[in-house]
Image 1 (cartoon, rainbow, N blue to C red):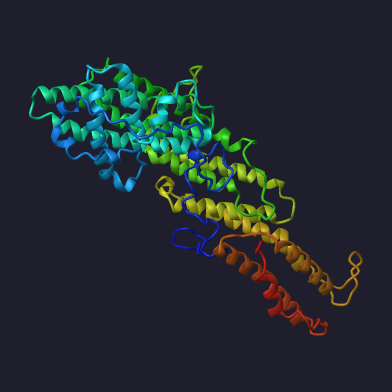
Image 2 (tube, one colour; image 1 turned 180 degrees about the horizontal axis):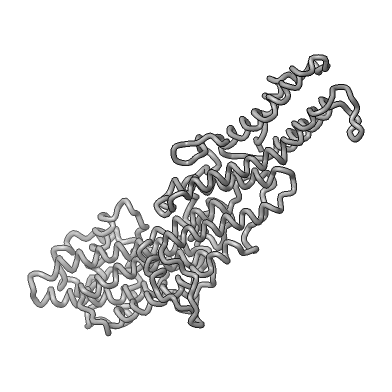
Length: 494
């Protein structure tokens, strides 16, 4: 039996097969599950602004006290920094003082367009102005772009709220004029930022599309209603209407992607080439990390799963009733594919080692993440029992034939093997050890369990045979019980 832990059954210790409990970087950066921790890509065709232009004329009508504190030399595009949100807000507020006059009604559209470029470039999202709804979105940059965009939208919202509170009281002509210009800047910024949602919807079908859609849906659903209330935009306002349409498109896109996830897990174009050492398949790390990323926008995912249940033909869709049901369904799909693909491993016992490694990795990754809150009662115990079945099958296939060589009379020739039982045992043992030294069990805890279990099945039978047959001449080198134990301790090093 496998040694039990109070929580997980098998004692998972040390680095284990799950060398990174986080599963690497967000799979949103990937077009397919190629590794446990792929991340990012180089940027191409990205909008690269110069120094922002200083709109000093007419700026005196807006908050001259703030202008006195402005350092024009500091106005350069800033990089997102989650640890410096407040400092970023201060910088953008100072930039706003110089750029805001261009959004007054007296300014021409060319000046306003230039100012909008400068404004968005300061958040490192000037590239949204180069996007359209026809899919002009570089797939290999999807994760990085969406993260930049979400951070920029959050910071932009803070800047607008801060400035709105500062100028709305006391009410006077200058404040009213600045509020109008602020609303115009907010509207044009929000409209430009929505271009990303159209490009995400236009992406080709892939796992990364769902993550991108959820990552865009969450900030749009949170930020745009706040802006609408702040600037009194009615539902018919172009930005309010566009944001509602974008949310509807993102939800529809997400629902279609969710329905395709099981097919993606099974898709032959993803890397299902089997590791010949029986180690953890890279797809386990990818998909378990993917499921965690999918749940980071749990509210948006809830709306996706709680939406219309009717399919295109009026049939019930396979959407689970909640995110927990979806996670369990997808993990079960992954387990089924692993079981199916393990049949391609031809060496006796290697299939069981592969399933032990991968089931152990699934359990570890689930328990060490927020996926654990969705595990139904008995889920872990069921996997422990499954692993015990794999271990039992491995022993029967790999080691029972070795031990069976000890059955027979010493010195008597076997008609088929033409050798005595002890010689047959040594030969079978060498063959198995030679092959299984190259098999890999990355988890130290699981590797220790396997070695101990093999030793407990082989060494006592060998010792009993030597005790029962003292007349048998045992080779002097490498054939004591202790020496065989050392030989078995070298298994599964890869």
